[in-house]
Length: 105
Image (cartoon, rainbow, N blue to C red; front, side):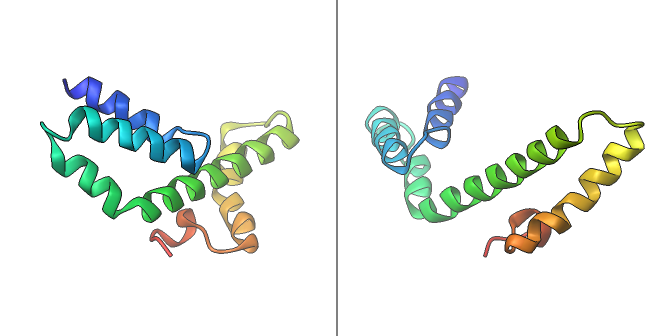
């Protein structure tokens, strides 16, 4: 049952649009609300924070993929580690991000 709940929640946060995510959350509530009402309530209460966090994480991941794609190959693992250490500083010039601040804004 735990794996099924996790799979259903995954469908929510992997949705392509907010409307699709809301539809998936409604479906989740229909299926699980009788057994586990707090889960859907928590998601509804923290909806904006969940969406913002997911978008911030996806933004950082996309930026890191773009940086590594443009570089091609790396002479050593240390070079890649340095790039990943310095990259968030460059990314944050476009605005504060979750990765740099460690908290939601």
